Length: 226
Image (cartoon, rainbow, N blue to C red; front, side, top):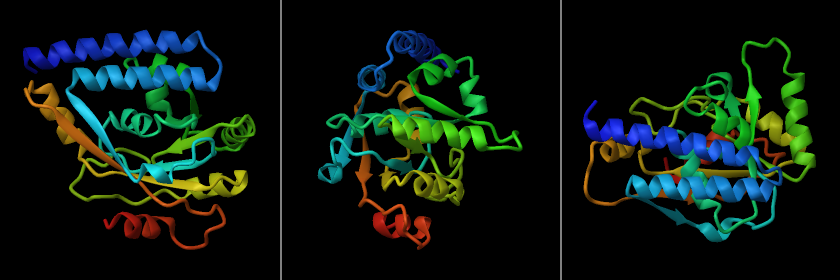
């Protein structure tokens, strides 16, 4: 790891925890949204990354969604936050136990708005109860249906099926978004100390009814021409 990477890693750790503690002090969803957005803007500016949002007009400012996105890099939640900047949509991220307890991200994730998914538990009643409670409170749910970061060469890996149950149980329309830029590769370039600015493109898809019977992943691929 070169000096530039070490410097940026230390800065990112400091910033993530700073905003994690800021989030701990607020309770209202839109206040959390404001702080999450400020964090995203600050870190992406440091990385010389800007975000281009395609089909932004498809977003309904005050609507609740189950937002689904592909997942190639650790900065993907920041990209989604930027895409929703002009809306009042606040979502709870479905977070794996490893991230929830992470030394790097844990404070931010726990305070920023997340629902813990513990795959080691035999019973999932508490998990679905937490989702139901948040939806009743007016919040959206955000999830990466691939279940993990896609580190291979494929544009998309197989979706886990649980997200459709979440949508159906809570009558949440599904909002597909697609981060077209390979964010992991671009982040690597940023950490290497490149001088030029980079653009990440995220596309907003057409809303999918929660009662949709067709295969959502196939609809997703067709929608974004994957």
